[in-house]
Image (cartoon, rainbow, N blue to C red; front, side, top):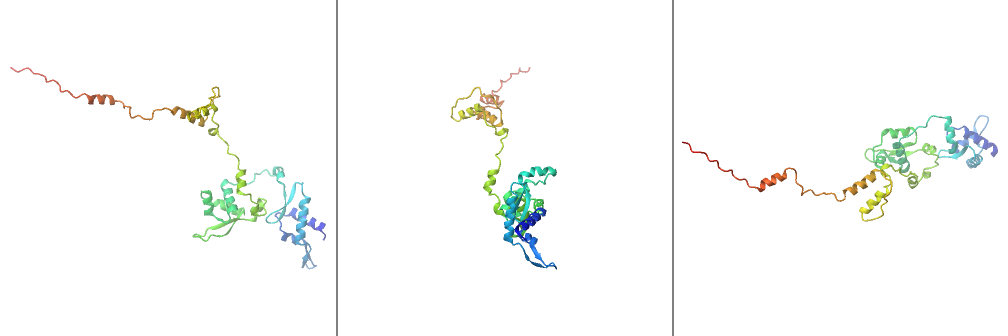
Length: 273
């Protein structure tokens, strides 16, 4: 079999396969046998198959599908920019995973092998057993051993299915954590974090010793932060010591203490006959 014929066989096998095919599996396509079905040898070696796969990858450039190399082997798949059109053929929404599930998967991917207790230490909350069960059933993680500590907790690590799902050949292709932080969206400001109006900010600066010109005709704006600034200005000069104030009724009591009690004049009674 020449290389042209071998590439056709290889192309057909990848197009019809449901899962990625490894080089070892692809070698089976070219096993020569005798009349009794006994294997005589491999007609195409592994190095030749790799060269043919690279040729196929170049042949399919610029098309709707591409040849990719994954952790578990090679496969044809649609290009990312075509996915939005293919989703129209399957209106069912893909399964969504909770934030806790994705956080747990990320911790396992970046710190594997890791135990459930170590995951909880990173997240700061308890890990629901349904989360690990979901990831195990999805075959994205597996138990690779047990930590040699009291209780011998299971240690989790990712699988080749995890790499294939995210189009990764190895864990080395995971993005660096610094890159992930840069990808985080900027926090959105709500009404409470709205900028302080210019005239209120000027009043606040003046109370701190600065004396910028206050814009008299500035439009009035109301927000929680601006109300705080106004309250700060209103509190300036307020009385905070109330020791010199008297409670109601204290004046009468003091006057009563200042004037000594006078004995009443004796009443003379006429003598009896």
